[in-house]
Amino acid sequence: GNSVTQMEGPVTLSEEAFLTINCTYTATGYPSLFWYVQYPGEGLQLLLKATKADDKGSNKGFEATYRKETTSFHLEKGSVQVSDSAVYFCALIDDKIIFGKGTRLHILP
Amino acid sequence: NAGVTQTPKFQVLKTGQSMTLQCAQDMNHNSMYWYRQDPGMGLRLIYYSASEGTTDKGEVPNGYNVSRLNKREFSLRLESAAPSQTSVYFCASSEGWEADTQYFGPGTRLTVL
Image 1: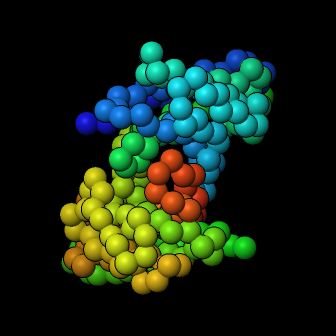
Image 2: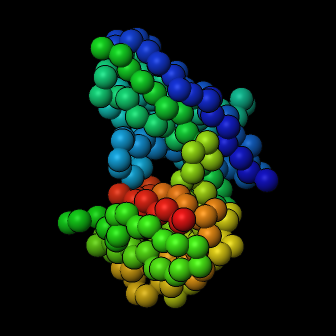
């Protein structure tokens, strides 16, 4: 069946560091891929998405490219801020939506 | 425009008690969802309603029932609560089913003693 695997956290970085959170997937069809972010005490909100191979989603300085050949959708940001501290979820929709287990990110000032 | 609202925010139950979690959206979305979030498990889909008048099981439906009361409202019922149902419950909605952004409520933190 379909699945999403993302790197385990927590990930701790200093402010202005480069961020990568890995996400790989397995799917029988051609899924759409998403990154959601959850700030403390809140529900999830969409960060970015890509609906077909080679698409790049971007928002708030974050970006991720849909790589069909490596079945990956890694999240990157060039310079993180303390306000980026949150839990990040990779997800796919094929016949139904599946979320990864989440990666907690801590940014130190 | 409130988006997705959930009530209550917190609830403590004793084993065997029943309760209903309420969810409403004001975005005229067709699809609605209930998830539970547990440490180390991410989000798991309990039930969803692809459109008004339909409901389907997700990944972890046992012990739950749902009602799509109308286009706006989608409730989740625990008939006989168990400690294993201690979790944070999120409701979400989306305009359609395929490849659509989901909008989440703030969550209900449920503890079953």
